[in-house]
Amino acid sequence: MKKLSVEVGQRFRERTSWAAEWEVEFIYSDGARIPHARLRSIRSPVDARTLAIEALLDRNRFERVA
Image (cartoon, rainbow, N blue to C red):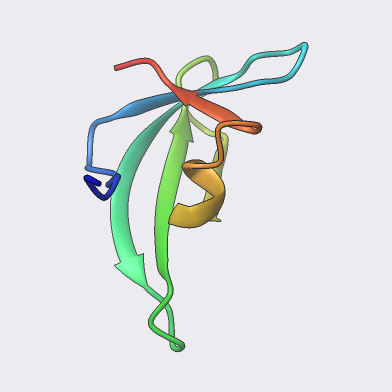
């Protein structure tokens, strides 16, 4: 089975009624070596958030759009 990955520049949409779209700015590992992605909002570039890659790949929470 192919392991899913996240790359800089990919876009994800939240699976909520608001359906915000986010672009991956950069990827890093925290002190516990857990990979995280820094996301920037497409609608509002001043809005950013950091999520564990595992959360971003959760199909119940996000879907990849680009």
